[in-house]
Length: 509
Ligand SMILES: *[C@@H]1O[C@H](CO)[C@@H](O)[C@H](O)[C@H]1NC(C)=O
Ligand SMILES: *[C@@H]1O[C@H](CO)[C@@H](O)[C@H](O)[C@H]1NC(C)=O
Image 1 (cartoon, rainbow, N blue to C red):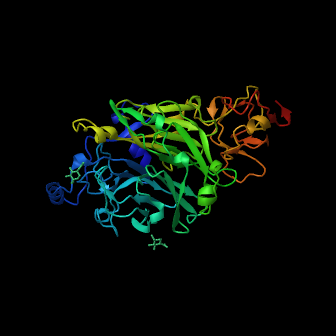
Image 2: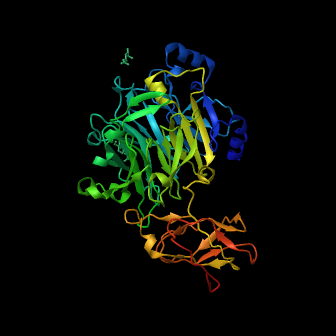
Image 3: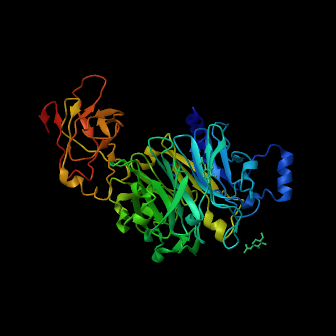
């Protein structure tokens, strides 16, 4: 119902992006006040200066789309806000403070919020929010409050956890702008990771232990050779910017997720198992090689925000290219295995944040940040946009689509057992044991939505996935009635070198 309402309003607002549909757009941000008098008062007192507001983070949870606005300049009435998605569609909705104006009070280190960048909701209906405690922007920053993690119960709109980072978690240059969650089987078993872009660190917080610790590694550092940026006609240098975009993978065969990360001034992707990060003793005991080089996105591959689907597809913003890129982690990361999922030289100038919600919709916020920081925004023009698209639509027809394979021989039956060659299987799995695939199965050109498989010794029971380990997997395709129509597995994935062997009702193919 919600999605329907939302997408109905979209057609009229479509921009040049092909797959992403523009849902909201603004020349300047604005806020909802309890009444017009209070709003006029806020404008007169300087508590609201609309042109100073730059949205940087988004997150969708049920009927709320959260939007964060850092207090880089004065006149930002609330740093954490939302747009109700079940309200009648407006193309430029005003922001509503979350949970309230009072709980966004700057300088109130007890119950307020100062500056919030990216935010993350979890499957236990909690919203994870890091208040970096600052007011202003480099070189004019005041640290009003300490770095404080705030976790909200989204069902009651109350803060259920407040945790102040330890002094040891922070260094003098610390600047934390991104967050990733590592959700275990229970709500207690949740870890949050924070990338310290300018302090070159990774801070881990355990919900269960209510405790944090900090990792350092030279892979968190910027690559000095790619610190020059050309965006929106501006040339500037962000050569000191280290670890920025972070996201966790689905759980791997060992039960642990992988944290993918990349410095902003870099085209390289790195990773570390959360088995390392979750263990505080690893701060000292981790070996250099516990952190891995995953691969390279290629030229103009700067990124600040990434997210991985539960099928292992990573989406990331390509800030030099006004685009969202994708990469399926089933393939080695190199430029030819990545794709531009969508691009728009007007609407996607600085795609600042990218998220995937529980309904497998992608959300993208673009905000022309370099123009805001390095020059001046033109407020007669649209500067900020929020887009959405189903994930499947976003990656359709690209190299990022989950792999599937073809058996051209007509298969007069409902059960077949593709046998996967051992040699190619382990080509990639040395570093990353997590290998989940969702091959698409078609019947006479029609994609089948569900089928089941039997895989011995597997920890997953998600019926949609086939976990690649060496061996032969009986795969049962369910159809309404018995049929002689052929089942086809579209396309050939990288891990099958020649032909797929299938066994159908005892017949070998
Ligand atoms: C720093 O902030 C003060 C007070 O808001 C302002 O007067 C000054 O111009 C700012 N300096 C810079 C470099 O932005
Ligand atoms: C978590 O730690 C913080 C210290 O920052 C403390 O104030 C808070 O009471 C603790 N919460 C729980 C639930 O233990």
